[in-house]
Image (tube, rainbow, N blue to C red; front, top):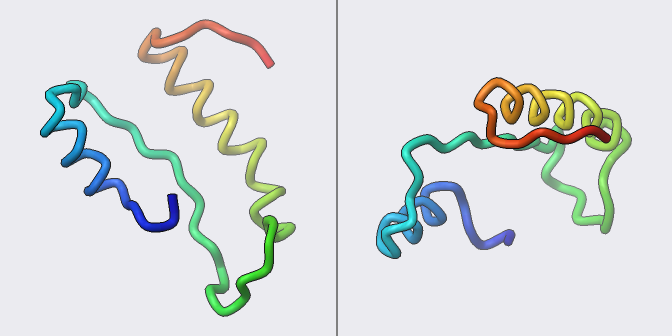
Length: 69
C-alpha cells in the first residue's frame, strides 16, 4: 500500500473499466515523516473517531450503506 497513491489506484480502476462515477478519498497525513516506527502516533489514533464519523456521514448522505458502529 505504501507504493501506491490515489492517482495510480484511479488509473487502474479506469483501465479495468471499474471506475465509479464518484470517488471519495478519506486519508490522514502524518505530521512528521522522519520516524519509521511501526504503528500509529497518538495524533493519528485520536483522529480515527473523526474519520469514522466523516465516513458514516458520506455513506448515509449518499445512501451507499446503512450501518451502525
